[in-house]
Image (tube, rainbow, N blue to C red):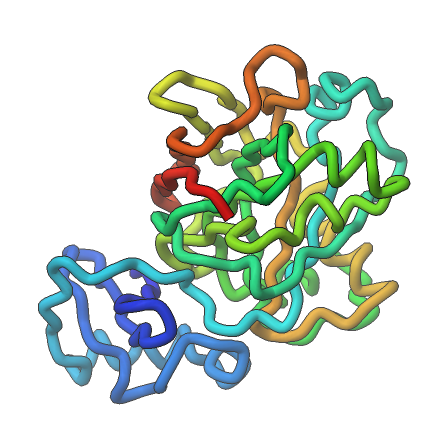
Length: 283
């Protein structure tokens, strides 16, 4: 099954898509898909309600797809988590996870427009696996305990402005990461127990229909479990938080491709998790 939030911006409602493709209204269980719902065993309750026939079928034709998580408390991001991506940026693979943050209000729907910031000359794309936290992660010690904190996974576009990130910020990455609309998320939250091997998922991206990135989460330097364990030593991850796990090679920062401009389109896909498409506009 897949958890969805559909409807106009600010008016999204929760839905669930069953294995047979039918979409069901989730409001009998919750007003939204957020941290409180996930913390209250929301995914298991959704599955049970579906099996019991307690969720009415819904006609969602034509509805906008929103981000699958409402109001994330934090968007924690990992930099240079694929060796080839580090190399294309002229860096050595990190010895420990590189951590930065995006403002939670950067999160938009997977097909919403992305706005090129004022003064931008180096806006870039980054397809990433996003972890959605379902249980508090605090001083986690084992991989099994780390993965038990995961509610599910989705597709993230960690849009970046490289001049802001690298050249004018003095190395303060978040300045190039927090522009409005800079984190399209979705289309759906796929429960963790329905992803057979999170460390073997193909990730791809395209700009204006031309291939850019094509890699696999098997190439991560730090696995999903390792990231949660590490982060939990320095911060408490709460239900509804998002962790962007890094992007593979094939971004404009490499020098092999032009940066983004208004009028361009980005498409991103992760095997089993769905596809996004954004058009570029002006801030």
